[in-house]
Image 1: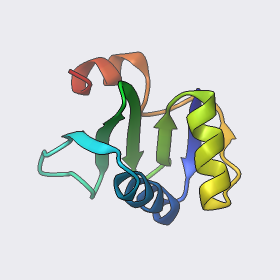
Image 2: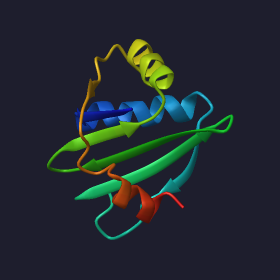
Image 3: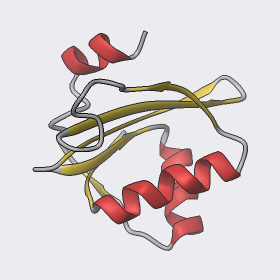
Length: 98
């Protein structure tokens, strides 16, 4: 399940909330344009994984289980929109989720 078009501020809030609630950052995109044009991170907890991508045109995306997305929506009072990703496509995930 992939949530799309997440405003940058909310995307950052999701990351902060996850890290404050036991999710470990296990990968972060570190190229020269990180956080400027593109970003990609992986968080893990109890053998579960959440992938998050962002760019300055389409903003944030989150790939996780339906249950995780529902939990995030409740905790952060946000209605995530499910849709076709721009940055969490299989070819991009394959490059960064190693």
